[in-house]
Image (cartoon, rainbow, N blue to C red):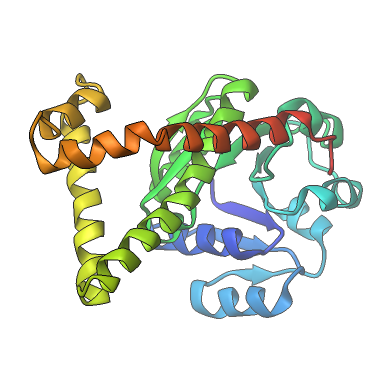
Length: 258
């Protein structure tokens, strides 16, 4: 696949472009005219071409990445005509493949969800359905998680939102450490390193549940166990689950194009 088109040059699309180039993609990247200043910057720094219309992007691309807002989806669909079998990779949250097929008849539609870490080729890349050609392309952006259907993909979207919440949790913990006298830089380093520790242990022991791994550390009588007891008593985990329910309900109940 040597010609990729991008409709909607927003911040996430920009991260995708950077990640593709950093990951070794040397084919043509064709950008829609939206956000001309950002598109021109990408053209200069990452050898992209910004075209004059969405239709031109679709006409010249083998695969089209759709990165517009849900409210703009129908408008964009009315401006372009994908050829039968042309790949369409949608980054639009909450728009299932049935809706995409209605708006872009004949296209081979794949949904993808990824984070800003795509820029550094370290993103979690969820997609549905399995599509080896698309997987080879997006696999350079990080770790692929292929989901079988739209229902599971919506749960993957919730997981992507959790990614964003982690920043705020870590920020609050950093602030507490700083208020107690630890320099902010060291507080940040300790927290991020601790998170890396957890991920390394979990990755190396896929046969062990996350709870089991935690219980090995929070053994009775340890300081870790003392803090965990308070978190469990205050049902801190229940608040995270409640937030997940709010997001999932919003995804499942929103009208198309809203």
